[in-house]
Image 1 (cartoon, rainbow over the protein chains, first blue to last red):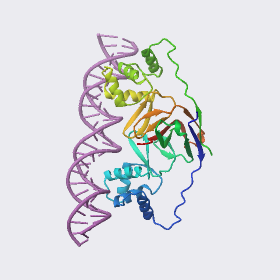
Image 2: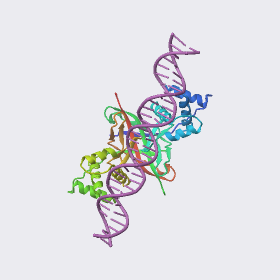
Image 3: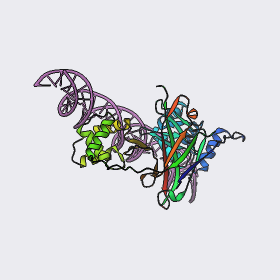
Image 4: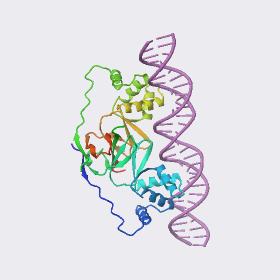
Length: 156
Length: 156
DNA sequence: TCATTGTTTTAGAATTAGTCTAAATCTACT
DNA sequence: AGTAGATTTAGACTAATTCTAAAACAATGA
């Protein structure tokens, strides 16, 4: 009868930086390895987005990219984010209907969302879902599990 | 270290209809019991929405209400859905950024979403989340857990 | 190098879900 | 009935996102 079970395992740290490539070289090879053609705009967008683990809206990313002096249009930010999502480099998070968040950490993890403050933060420990496929809707395969734990401030 | 655990239990069936009230009386007392003043519009909206377990957009509900002959504005549908959400009678489901679904079944349950077809269906078995509160972000309390299992068609 | 071709970017228009507004209508209460 | 507060309404408005069609760019091959 059980259709889902979750097991807990800890988040392995990203221990990169032990090879001598520059950030730009790493970004370039990341994009290339996904079959993404390199352009000035995609590089600066990726550079900004992947600078750290973050949850950003298209607009926030657009501002950040502009802030770094690059000339990139908003349409390109949307196009590029869409491309990155398609290639699995970033994840979309749907928290409310008014805006989409893009998570620069595409690896499997979940989120706390504070409905009072709007804070969106990672759940540090991972839940690994193991699905018994015949319990999924007929003719379908698992894509991804989105788990959002909505929290409120205790004393608002 | 474990911050979440899920236990499985089966969905108890709604065994209503063993008292002699009409659907309209039940709707009225449901709304009243939540402190919602009765109006013609709220009654017909609730009637349409709670006729069955369903996931609808505001627009779909607006069309359904209009289809039943009632004269209700779209703003009222939005206002009323917002009110019902605030009162805990319906749940919002955020599947993508382009539209909000309203779930006429507000009890705790989760969803399969087929990204190919757009089908949104209930997970039949429930996952009861037990959170250790000190693992939540400081100063926050659990509100609600949203779990969406995204699936794809096997042979598209 | 130049021409050709396909890809990408761009500004701005278009779309669309949802919210806001201010007036009209209702409802409840005296 | 009269008043006050709540609710509804049509349509204007907003904001995120998509679309469009032209311009810029990149890659390829003669």
